[in-house]
Length: 330
Ligand SMILES: NCC(=O)CCC(=O)O
Ligand SMILES: [Mg+2]
Image 1 (cartoon, protein in one colour):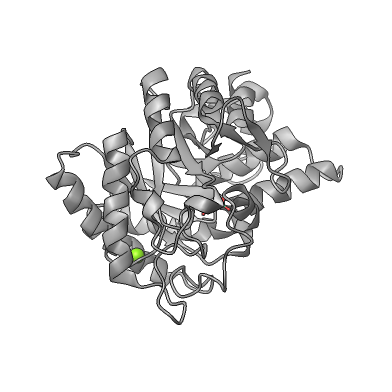
Image 2 (tube, protein in one colour):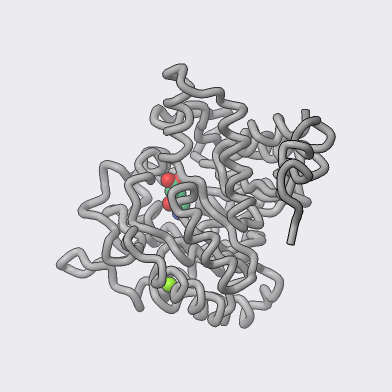
């Protein structure tokens, strides 16, 4: 139906900057970014994470300062992760239910200082268990689904009562979204959202995150009995469909860049808000390429994040959020 060369020249609209901008099909803005932040005990504490160069754990006072900075840059939401000291970890993850745990204190402090930034809190037991699994285990080391869900419900209510805006279950237990939604409704948190880590894969890209939350040395075995097999695409659609039926407001695919086919498939199948988590190993790969002189950081960060938008994401969780927001605001 359209003209042929030479009447049609696709290079024509690419010939000038204004025209390339005018014809851009997708655009990345700071409002697309969720910044994952690691919190730790103490005051005026910054602990750099060796395997995530440029990322630190912050004590709550410094995390509040970073939250203000993120807000000023136009970043709409933070995702908080605790580095729970070894002595507060246990087999039953009791610290997850403590109203004064690191995450609850950080949530209250940030919401108090920067009420207009969204706070997403992760629901899973791995930062609180002595064995580093996302749930409670039986004697064979198998993560028990239904007992774990009960704890996740308690953890979610604990976070919602502290002021969390988005509850993000990342544990991959069956049935947890419905149980959490019902409990939030009963507890009057009708506007607290659920962003379900619906398709979370058992991935080799999570290594630096485990350093950041202190589980690398603790974890026995792997997470293949609850996280998804990287071979599977149709199963991701089933996972998403169940989480939506149980009341998820939005869904997440994780990791990000190696799973953009899943993002696109989910977006096409369900037309709901889809997020992706550009995980720690993806961040570390970009930083390693930059350190090796093989890549231009700014260009690579922006191109990579734009790819998430093109694949259908409403937003991206990325450790590059502040850097990207600065570039986009410049
Ligand atoms: N539930 C959050 C994560 O597991 C993050 C993984 C990563 O950044 O590698
Ligand atoms: Mg599921």
